[in-house]
Image (cartoon, rainbow, N blue to C red; front, side, top):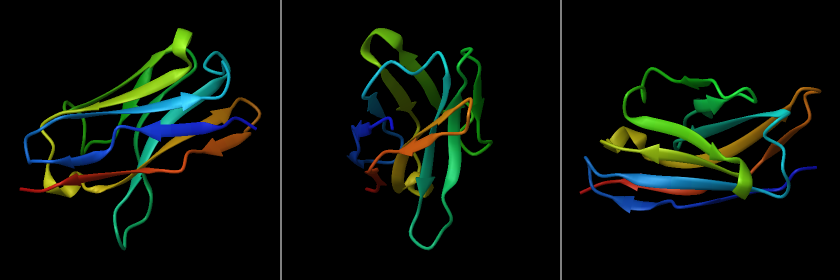
Length: 116
């Protein structure tokens, strides 16, 4: 199973930016779709952004134009660049990997808090 380790969360003021990182334990991007999910207190976990093995991307409407997902194949790392952050972006953010055969892994999560 692939191990995923997130980093980069923290406290930021509204309008600020953060970059989350997700390091995979091995090179998987050619056969895995990678995603970022988030879960706010009392809410269901929701998909924020996804980067497919071929490189195309998907964004939830709530973050479109503000968040960017990318990956560095040499570093086995996926990023989520978050800009123009809003208080409603406050959540625990999770990295997710799913293979073509539907094997999946989750990271441990990283807290993002947007508050003045």
